[in-house]
Image 1 (cartoon, helix red, strand yellow):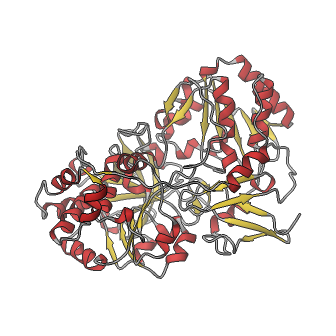
Image 2: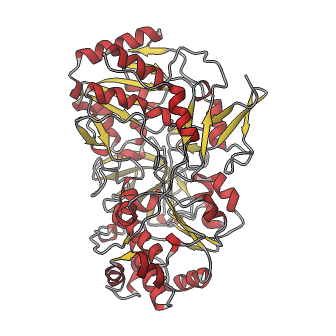
Image 3: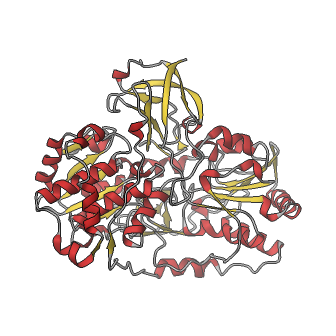
Length: 568
């Protein structure tokens, strides 16, 4: 193989790194700005993973051809609407979405919404039409970076390395790694981020720091948003948010006359009213004029495909079900691609019961907890042995994947599987693979800026603290630096503050109105004392979460729950 061959990291991560094959080793590309010659721990872990080498049917290894024949037979014997196509984000290259083309034409039930970012995206769209991040240069030139509900140094380690010498402010209920590196840490109570955004708006006005020119030229309903912010006494926010007003003063002293970037994470919007919460934060940023300045702005999970044509999109009248409300047991056949719903989907008990009542097909590169309930397992080709393009939701750069290792196991790529199924069912085959990839490699989208910013003009959020008592805890999760969601190393502990009077090693039963599970306690005073903290990928955490959707985007609301903890 040519030593210049490129490899795009396929993982669900902001950085979207570019690797390069050098003498049978993959190294970070020095030409890719965010990768900057280094590979992170997750990419290293990915390279060590053992890929599926054989198809499996009812627990026994079979040939790839046999597995494909079984899949075709099952699809032909099943009413299309009684099949579910469920795709995860285990691999998020452009070519991974091609399988949806077949299942749309076939007539399967599809999902809509998101398990991670839907509410926040809906909030941003309501204010500025498209979920688009500013160019990376605007972050690199910022003076102060506000990290809001995002453990920036863990979830975006490469982007963080580019700006690690900046001044940071962190807003998070957990004293995260980035919080410890920050000039100010506002250890906020969960689901009060919208209140803090309103409080900051009020302070900005009192100190005459709002951007009047931006509001005049681009803003709509700014007066209504400001009226919401002054709808209650300033001092009342201290008790609800947990943030002293003195710290808010310190914040404005720090950012005055500075170029400010706000990095918003998923933590702020994992609630029923997640879109409203995000919209409050985005409206505060607009009140300060950050969206149109030469430097700074607001970063979230950008729509990485914005400005590109959709090469696989097929218009269909398929039934669509909200992804968090999926009832796997109501389908005769469930096709799962690159996902691990037994761990990552809300309400684990319901997920397992559903999978046990369906014929489950799993299509992926490695075995995971969901495979235990799969009737048929079809190996997907390793990212090292197939072509792809990786667009980033963290920045505007893209990464290219070429074939750097010959395929050794019996497997097929998503493109190959889709064309196989299209042909078997008499549908038109896909465009040439190289033509699709070339378009994404060479096309540079125009990231149009909004012409009018619609400020939030009405607020209707039910605070969780109204249900909070001394006997229950906020349920919160975050990413682990040694894993990515349910991939790689496992951490199934519950983390509690020492003031809870639990001790290291205690076995506790944690319950919510949705379910219960047992956990071993680890004491960590970085966790706020009113919170029960779990790392993403904890195999038992989602026994506690609601299989229900948020108010605006058909998306999950994992943290819309309080839990009780008792010694087991």
